[in-house]
Amino acid sequence: MAATEILNRADIKAPQVRLMPQAEKPSLIGLQREDMARLLVERGVPERQVKMRVSQLWHWLYVRGVADFDQMSNVSKDMREMLKEHFTIARPEIVEEQISNDGTRKWLLRFPPRGAGRPVEIETVYIPEEGRGTLCISSQVGCTLTCSFCHTGTQKLVRNLTAEEILAQLLLARDRLGDFPERDTPQGAIVPAEGRKITNIVMMGMGEPLYNFENVKTALLIASDGDGLSLSKRRITLSTSGIVPEIYRTGEEIGVMLAISLHAVRDDLRDMLVPINKKYPLKELMEACRAYPGLSNARRITFEYVMLKDVNDSLEDAKELVKLLKGIPAKINLIPFNPWPGTNYQCSDWEQIEAFADFINQAGYASPIRTPRGRDILAACGQLKSESERMRKVDRLAFEAMMIANHGED
Image (cartoon, rainbow, N blue to C red; front, side, top):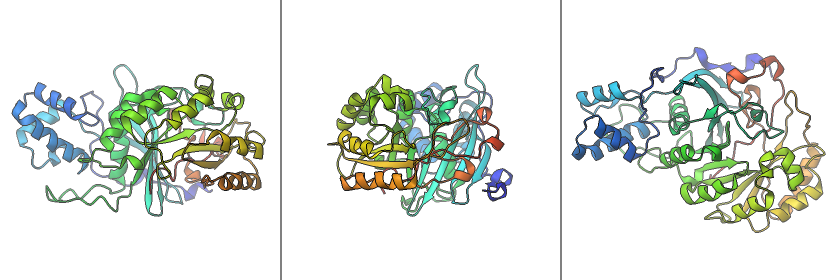
């Protein structure tokens, strides 16, 4: 696709929001209510007022989506000055915004240094579909898992993202999409939940979410809080390569939908494709999936399966996949692989992908073949890399498999 067909929006004015400052102040974004209350008390807010002040801030941050204390019109001027002096609610810097011809958007975001570190960059992707819009959120800068077919995995782990930085991706995307109510909406007005541009989120960007469990947990519980961002847990999907102990914790402590990057039905092959399998082999992974709370035909686990020619795409593989998933309410996303520079893998022939899908369908499992989205802006899962670690764009003319869309409840 010609470069002129990629719309770079860096020259278009962003909403008037404050960017994250270089000097570190504690952010109020990503704090649980009790932690926010503790910080306010430390800054002199009377304890009898704290519950009310936390409720005010929660509303402004997560219902109205403000990024400037001065916009909190029902908070006293003295209180706003104290908040500005000691805290931040700033958004990350947008280094680049791209919009694909199919409507997919990708943001390259820069976060300031943490402690003695350096600024870091991550990518966040939005995919519009008929009747829904899915935001793909990153949980780490880089990744530790080195899955052999994944381009993102070729970037080493830099650090975990904080709960603030995970939530900031959602807040910024809603800013850019006009997905918060108008700033002059009267306080106390009923803000409709329908008609949102972002209806679903997936923890499927850079990194392994379950290797950053506590920050991901905090962020997702805030995202699903009914008094704030109010996303249904059935519209939030966490994707993991199979960190078994934390799968149990995810079901018990977070309760969102689960997706598994499976990609192989035998341990010897999965050890190569998804090396974490050496630590948590298929038997243990399937036991954790079967034990996931609340599973039903209406609440299934999604299994991602990238189609690699002459590697994992035979009908024998399809038969073993059906056996492996027996008793688990599941759907299988079949992902046509698109090679990237340096990979030795090839995409399965289309006829083979369809035959594989037909067999699984006949066995009673939904097995949609994912249509790549955002290919012209390198926005598919497994393609996300921070700017500082990217290959030269001229070399990145091939693309990886698309896994993001169609997760969670419609």
